[in-house]
Length: 185
Image (tube, rainbow, N blue to C red; front, side):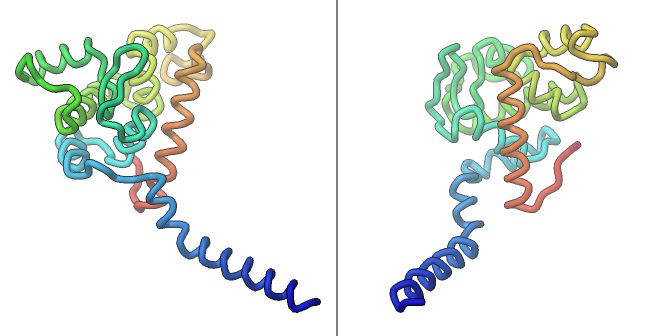
């Protein structure tokens, strides 16, 4: 083997080792825990796994607090106006809340996730309902085309919602690997 080949091979091995040793640091950049004060506070208040909340924020807005969807959902957790209005009533919030404020957005998002848990009880169904709507999930669970047992979905008719579920689950798996937490169920 020539000196040049040995040098190139050595550099590759050193770089590979560095990447391996730094992979958690790289992954923590890809899977951040921004707004952790609010995520921890409201995850605890609403009995949620904070890694699920981070996973949803990453899927919804990639941690962009000013995110606005084409359907008008706003902020980190992409809160729809109808959900905001319902939360204002249920949580007795001021009508003039700033939905883009990270604390307000995360509080409402966590409250809504908790509400979905009370309704559906299973993480996959909660994630699907967060994206596709709880009314749709109820309809799909009662339809033999989509659910054999009325408790689990075997088919999600909205491809966007099916993709969303897979994205959140992938995020959740990575957050759990990186930050050593167990999921809720």
